[in-house]
Length: 272
Image (cartoon, rainbow, N blue to C red; front, side, top):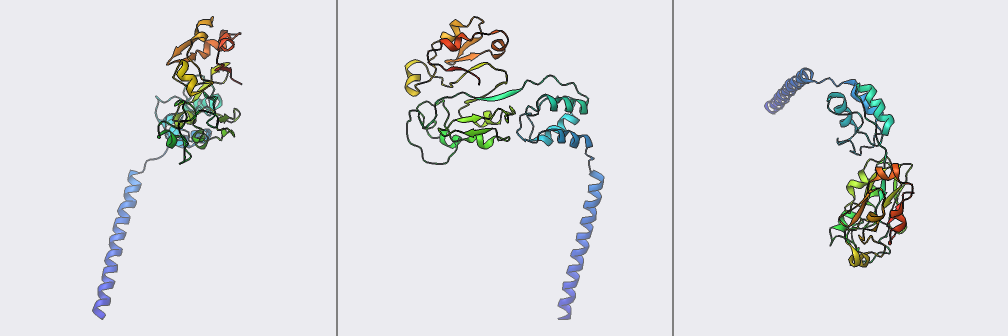
């Protein structure tokens, strides 16, 4: 019995000494190998809006703060949600020159809610746009339109999107920072980031044309090209059967958007 107790005590003592040894080694290594964090990183991070949206191209605000402080090639104006004030402050803190940041806002390029649109089938499953789009590209006859499950709203880090009763995203312009998170998560790409001063834009995302487009959606662009022909400033092009408007030209020189008034399907609208 005494021998057993002695053996147990010996084992505990040996384990304690081993633990103490390795603990000492780790403590010394931690002290020797410790990297001192630049305090400016924390200061810059405090300036950022903490949306963790990734619009800057980095994995969150801390990662961007570290990059902009330590890497001379990272510009100080990458925080889209922070807009000009944040870019200016980061520029001051890092002694880098910041270019002017053009404010952006999310715009929904679909006007036909899933509650009213022609359907291929009735869906029953996970309430998520990505999941729904995996099944024959979604239930809508128009494979390019909004699915209406609110994935964009769920991923908006600033609470700037809510879903209407008929299943279309509504952008809260006061809250929208233009981070682009909603644009990235939408499987149908019906959300576009546009300059805040944009006058008009296309409220359709269909790549179909003519009769096919109208069959899939009664209010779809039919790619007739009238908008291209009537624009006096050559600011409208037809790309993949959809009008693409040069927003800069439109904002600077156009006072009479005839492309909108002449559009037979009214898929070009004022950005209200």
